[in-house]
Image 1 (tube, rainbow, N blue to C red):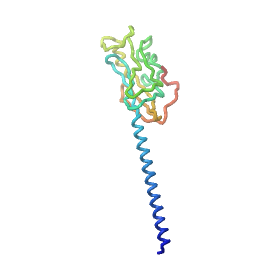
Image 2 (tube, rainbow, N blue to C red; image 1 turned 180 degrees about the vertical axis):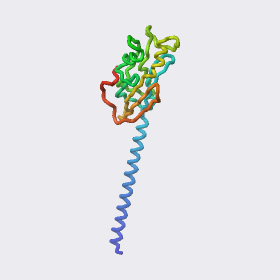
Image 3 (spheres, rainbow, N blue to C red; image 1 turned 180 degrees about the horizontal axis):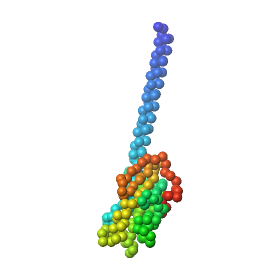
Image 4 (tube, one colour; image 1 turned 45 degrees about the vertical axis):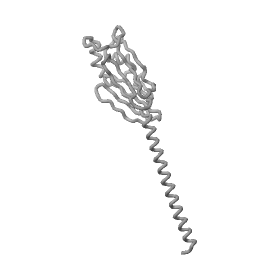
Length: 192
């Protein structure tokens, strides 16, 4: 074999090896970018929880138990599976017709920091006091039992625009499912 042929063969081997090294570097770079993206996702992952309580008073709570902010994009509140437009309508369905006192905080459009919580609804008695634990108070007894009829669907997103829908009810365990995007406001959207 001539010296010229050996040189060309060595050049081909060098080119093949250089191509393989380049492909390996590209794969390592792509994998590193993927791992970094997963780390960023984990660093900004919100986890919303909705619950109700009767101690020390009857109230509903919404909290971000995740490590990143939760941007609430859409809320549906239901009583007995039927959507309500606001807390006044919800209390009317639970307690019957009449004027019901309550204090509220706006969930819709809220950005929850990691670890933040709020009380979206606290029913109140005729003297405008929270319904404290009192089994002799018929309003407390009814509201305590019927608070479990309230359910929510809250669609929220992370700062990376990854979205989830929380479905919570007093009668069944909460579930959170990933969704591509949150729905736009409609006739059944909760308005505060």
